[in-house]
Image (cartoon, rainbow, N blue to C red):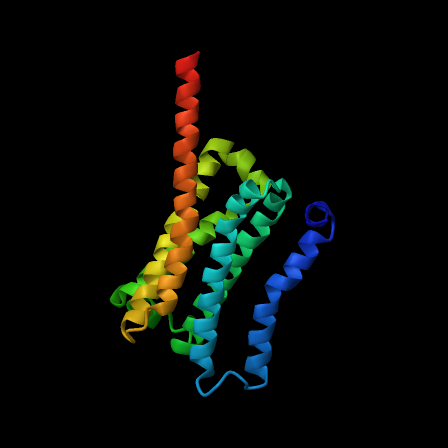
Length: 210
């Protein structure tokens, strides 16, 4: 039943609506002044949290697809990846607007001065490159091999995102959520390393047997 739904025409529209719901909730909270005593901090923090959550979802697609033998899950990966970029960009815009009032000089100095913002900015730049090349035409232009190498930068994005989150929380000595996201991403990336190692061993064994 689930596999049939994932392969059907309604899967992507429903995912699109579901992925927009956190943004809609935050927008409604801002319009109704229902984000607590510090709405600016709530918006910046929440959009950053949702960027990390969608990043975890993107990296979970391949393990779930392999472990559950559900190839149709791959259809949803591109949309989830674009939502990582969407929430990351909204996170950056909230910071630039609510913290820095869109004063570009102050933003540039703040990025250079504070390492956790620099790391987050670098992660967003990489996400921009991945989003810009996420379409079929980009695959044809770059070639499949170069495109795959470029999109492996998502692993670097994951590391930078956790480091950004860690440094941000270091001032408050609050690492519980950092540890949770770090553990999830470590498991997802570790699964890929183990799978790649097993596939390489199997390929070497096949060549030896031949």
